[in-house]
Image 1 (cartoon, rainbow, N blue to C red):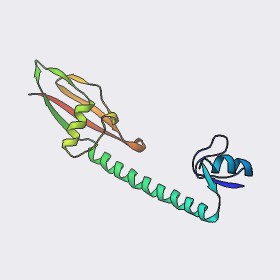
Image 2 (cartoon, rainbow, N blue to C red):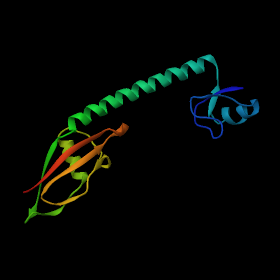
Image 3 (cartoon, rainbow, N blue to C red):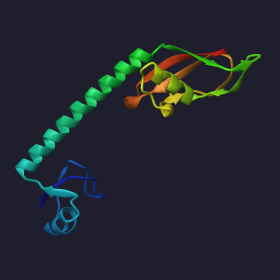
Image 4 (tube, one colour):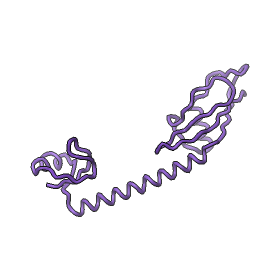
Length: 145
């Protein structure tokens, strides 16, 4: 019996593949647990349309991420913090950078920012790694208040 897999099934195949399995295995396991459906022409056509739609959505998302990365690349951020003799009271972390970027209209997760915390006044580079492994470098300048 030909089955269109709706989910990954160990030792059978991955989601979206059409596999030939025994009738009993198909009825008692794959169809019963809704891991797959009968590979009819309509089901196959529907699956192909879904694959095309998913690819288009991924392309749109990638373009949006590339646009955001190009806007952020080379951006200079100035953060003012309380300090005495060049040493900060506390430290500047990726969370502070994410909050600063949010004020500028960029929604960036602090987990995407690669930055070692700073405890002194000065300048340092930070890297932002977006989805699809797209990267942008920004410059962070810490000034005393």
